[in-house]
Amino acid sequence: MGSKRGAFLALGFVAIAVLEEVRPLRRRVEKKSRHVLRDLTMAAMSAVATAFMQERLVGPRAEKVLAQGQGLLRQMTLPRPLRVIAGILLLDYTLWVWHWVNHRAPFLWRFHRVHHVDLDLDSWTGLRFHFGEMTLAGVVRLMQIRLIGPDAASLTIWQALLLLSIFFHHSKIALPWTVERALSAVIVTPRMHAIHHSEVREEMDSNWSSLLSVWDRLHGTFRLDVPQDAITIGVPAYLGPGEVTLPKIMVMPLRPTDGDFSRGKSGMHRAPFGEHGTPLRQ
Ligand SMILES: [Zn+2]
Image (tube, rainbow, N blue to C red; front, side, top):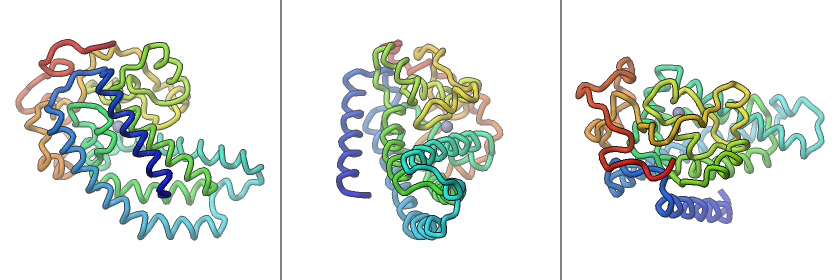
């Protein structure tokens, strides 16, 4: 990653992390230091896995694939700007499919649920993925490149926008409703993604997009109709803070997924946004 791009993304993350504290959409369930430290630890392990995959597999193989002119877009004669745009669209759509499969295939859900069991949804959650999921994501990135044959520019632009989008849509920035609605016509917004993080299965099974919201609109899975104060963030079997400690989420991929959507052993049901009162904004 170029240092300029790295600095730009870091700045974007800090701005989002500050804004969400100034204008929060949800109250905290867990202590912030505990939540941030746990998410950062997971993020650090994922960063190692991602760097390893990039250096050993994705980087060198992708270079070879692109040099050999493999992939759909390499077989077509398109003007370059069109090819760059088509590459971004296809990369984003195939990521929509991958996210959907992560929820549908029990083996993949073992890893992806580690992201979903976070009891607080904010920009830090956007950094927190299990290193197993990130290792698999490296293989998927290579498959996307092999299949699509995107321009190097498509990859660079899409990856930077995607990272910023992930920080943004996981955040709890309470945007004015009109702004949220207008933005969600194009990109994934915080209220949209909070519905995807709902413990209610039918709500979780929506808003799978990561950058452009058009894919959910096309699939009829776009939702912005759930009031934020009706949402409990998490997965039914893991709604207690004792269920989502760092050691537990690290080994969570080893646990079967059968009972994930029935109440946990404690039978507990957490009121939306914990015991700290009503949410701040709709
Ligand atoms: Zn998901």
